[in-house]
Image (cartoon, rainbow, N blue to C red):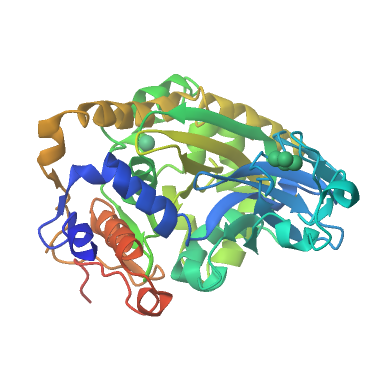
Length: 443
Ligand code: FES
Ligand code: FE
C-alpha cells in the first residue's frame, strides 16, 4: 500500500528501511512505476549515426531496440515479437533494413512495423491485421545528444522532467557548439548490487571519495612530479538537488578537476586553452564553471555520469533487486583534437570502466552491502541518512537551483523521497507540482 511504501523512507528522521534494496515485491513495483514511467537513458545519438543503425538495450528489464529512421529521427520499440515473445533483434548493434524474428519469421521494418508474416494468406484468418501486432513503441526525446525513452504517454516531456538539472548536464554536454560524440564502445559489466546504491551515490555522495580508496588509484596513475596537494580531502563544494524529481549532482569547488585523474593531456584540454575558454564562455552565464572541480550526477532513476573530463555516462540496468548491469560509454567534445579523443578513450579504460581502477573501489562497497543484506537482522535495522539534516543551510546563489554543502544527504533524501512518490502515486497530476525539498537550505 501507499502507506507502507511511505514508511520505508523517513526523511524527517533520516532513516532508510534496507528492504528497499532487497525486496522482490518492491522490485516488481519499481519496474512498473519507476522504470515504466520515467525517462530512461538509452544511449547517445552518435551510437546510431546512419539510417538503419540500431542499438539494442533495456528500459528497466524490458528489451528495446533504438533505431535511426530514414527521416533522421530515432525510434525505440519493444524488442519482443508479438507472436510468441521472442526477441526481434538479437545483435548488440549494427545496421539493418528490417528485423526478422528468428523463431517463425515475422518481419518488422526499422520503425517496428510488422510487414511480413510467413504463410499469412494460407494459414491466417482473413481478418488478421498486421498493424495490430507490431511491438510496443516508446516515446523518444533527445537532450543534447543523449537519447532518453519513456513508456508512459502521460509523463511530462523530457525537458520538464529534467527541469533545473540541465545547467549541470550542460557542463559535459554543451561545452562546444559542435556538441559531443561517443568514443570507443559500449562497455558492459555486472555488479551484484541493487541499482539504487549506484544511482544514489552518483547523485549526491561526495562523502565517500576521501575514504573509498580512490586516492591510491589516483596517485598510481599520475606522473611522478604531479603536485599531490590538489587531491587533499577537500572542504569546499556543493551538492545540487533538483526542484522536482530525484536528480542530483555533487561537485567540489576550486580544486582538482575530474580530468586530472585521466592524465595530463586530457587534463590540459579540459582545464585551460581554447576549448576550456570556449566552454567557459558558453557556460558561465549559468554558473561559475571555471571553479567547478570533480563532480558526479544522476538523472533519476538510473542514468549517471561524471562530467568535467571523465565523461563516463552510464545506465544502471536493474536485473532483479540484487544485481545490475552497467552499460557505460564515454563522450567527448565532437570537435576535440583526435589525440585527445584517443587519450581519453585509453584513460577511461584505466579508470572508470569494466576493469577501471576507480570503478572497482565503488562497486566493491555496493557488493559488500548487498551481501550483508541477505541477513535477517541486516534487513531490520534502519540505515542512517541524517547528514545535513537541520544543519544551517549553505545555499550558494551563484549556482542554479537548490544547493547545499557538498557533504550532505539532502540529495539522497530528495532521491528517495522522489522514489517513494513514484512508487506510491498513480497520477502525474500529483507527481508533477510538488517539488522535492532540500531540508537544510536557508537564504
Ligand atoms: Fe516471432 Fe513466432 S515468436 S515469429
Ligand atoms: Fe567513487
